[in-house]
Amino acid sequence: MKNEDRVILILWILKVSAKDTAGILSISEYTGYTKGGPPVHIHPTRMRYFIVLEGETSFQLDQELHRLTPEIPFLYQEELLTAPAQLSEKGKYLFFFTPSG
Image 1 (cartoon, rainbow, N blue to C red):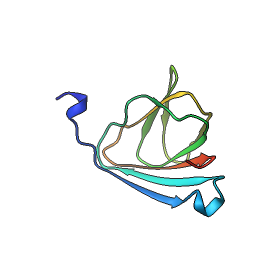
Image 2: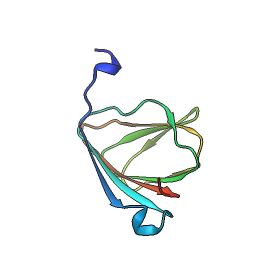
Image 3: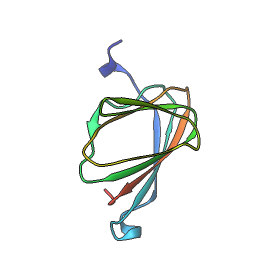
Image 4: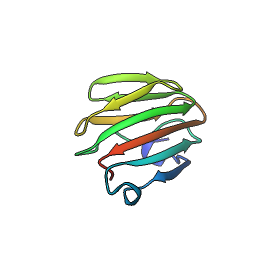
């Protein structure tokens, strides 16, 4: 099966919106029920704070690969190539974006 043909089942909940914080911060909770993740991408003009709550995730940041488990915080700056990938059957994490977007 080609990567483009995979179905990834996720639940994405917006916990705190830009509207709640005048655009300063947004917080999203991600729950994944399938291993894998999105292709490498860039989020311009944002700082991100990422924390795994359940499962295990690899996180590509430019050319570096980080392995994250629950309660290990991960902060990165805008305009870097990123790609989170869930390694466990189920995973849950929080994303904090600033400014919100």
